[in-house]
Structures are given as C-alpha cells and as structure tokens.
Image 1 (cartoon, rainbow, N blue to C red):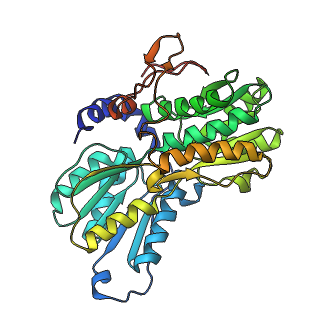
Image 2: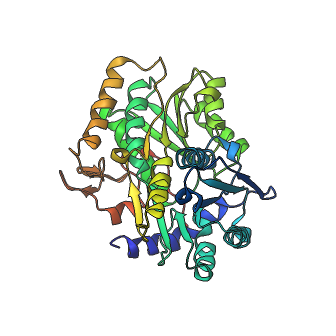
Length: 376
C-alpha cells in the first residue's frame, strides 16, 4: 500500500490526540437489531459496529449508525452495535462480538486500531474493518473518506456569504485530518473571496458541546459571521443560530439545530462503504484493502442548501462538485498549486498536485488561515 509508511508516521504523531476521541465517560451499551432475512446466503452475515460516542450525537457516530441501518435494511442482515466504548475497553467489546458469532466487525474510531488488530489475530475467519487507521492484516482492512473535498465546497459557500470577511472554524485536535479540512475549507473561501480569512479556535476535544459552543461564541464575538466546525456535536451551530450569524455543519445535516443559520454541511455517507464491504463478503470476494473514497463514490457530500444561499453561489458549488464527479480534477483537488502557507512560502507551484502522502501528513496552514497549529 503506497500510503502505508506516511500513515505510520502520521499515526505516531496523532495517536495521542485520537485517544481523546475515545474518552466518552458513559458506560458502554450494546444493542442488537435484526430484520427478517430471505436467503440462506444473507443469514450468514452478522455485522457488528463499535462506536466511540452515542448514536444520538448528530455527528460522527450518528453518521456511522445511519450506515449500519442502511445495510441492515438493504441486505436483510443481523446487525448489532455498542456505543460509548472507550478505547481502553475496546478489545473486550470487539472480542465479545466475535465470540457471539459476528463475522463482520466495523470499529469506527482510530483509537480502536490496536484492539482491532489484537482480536483479529484470534479470529482469522472474521472480517474486521477499522475506520481511519493504517494497520492491516489478512483479515483486517481500513476505510475512510476524502472529506476535504466536501470541505472545499462548503468553503465556497462560506466565502460567498460572509459580510465581515471573518469566518470562524471550531476545530478539535491539531492532527493532519483536521488541518487538511481547515485548509480545504479555506481554499474554497479564497476561490470566491480573496479578502476573507478563516479564524481557527482549538477545543482539544472531539465531543464536548459546552467547549464547542464556547469556542463558537468567542469567534462570533470577534466578528466572525459564519461558523464552521470539526466537532461531533451541533453546539457551534446552535451558537450561530442564537447570535444571528451563519454556520456550516459537519458529519450530518444539522439544519434542525440551526434552521436559520445552517447554510449547508459537509456530510458522510458511510452506507456506500458498508454496502461495498458486505457485498464483498457475501460474494466471497472480500480481501484486506485500504479504502479512501471521495465525492465521486458518494462517501462524502453536502447537505441541502439553506434558502438563504443564492442561486449564483449554488451554481458555483455545483460546478466545482461536477469536476470531481466527472474526474476533471485529481482526487487531491483543491490541493493543486499555487498554494502558499501562512508565511507566504510557496508550498506547491502552479499546477502542481499535492500527493496523498502529503495530504495525510499535512502540518501547515494555507495563507488565508488565521491561527496557530499547537505543537504535539
């Protein structure tokens, strides 16, 4: 796998931060659901999901659970899930699913990586899929999405809608995934509004509604009139709604939490990957691989536009989206030069495309981002 070594380096840098993703204090809860099956082939599949946060978070876990529900209905298979599973308890939960006969197990937090690998060694006939990690085995694959593509499109909306030219971004942890999303968003802003800046505030948490809201309020007090986020709760959206500014959601359509503020959102559609995996297993074709799919596959996309988004802005977004769908741009777009960092240094020359390895280890801000990347 060409990404392997950079993923290793990246993971060493960020493992500590991802550990925070698993710091959900609530007691793990396991739930089993099932729908009637119709064929002997389908009865052979039992899929389990291990979640780091509650399925009602409207964010990361909510999006994964929508994918679980989709494959349960589509394939008529039995599924189960455990929510609020700290990484320190992940191996026990994963092992219990394997002992109970679940033969496809999805582990949805980076912090579950080592536990997934450890359990997989003892269950060679079970398929394990780990989200966002880099370690694989004969019966362990990985999966993720090119969310930066959707981030870029939402940046176009934010850049077109701001009046103060100050756009706030509530960010979780300073890891390449988050930095990459901020930069893609900022490049979208820059494409339509070279005068606008993206102001970043770090919370140091994936899921803490109080901290997320506090960070959003601080950005609003500084004059930001659009609030974006890389957080798991809708708290930044609610802060925007309460203060009469616009917002850009993440993970899922968060418009119900901020009906006036929410312009659109960068959203996941995990059902694409989950369906692919189940089909591969059903057909006896599954093999370990590292999946990193984007808009063209439908894994990432946009929530519906708010009525406040003008037609000309929607058109700009759709034109850029079409470039991905029609493969007119490389997968790495918008990371195509010229790209400058905050110090004005040319990172990529005109027309030069950043590699996947560079995206996966990104550790700088582009020139229209205001804020620092904390040391790790």
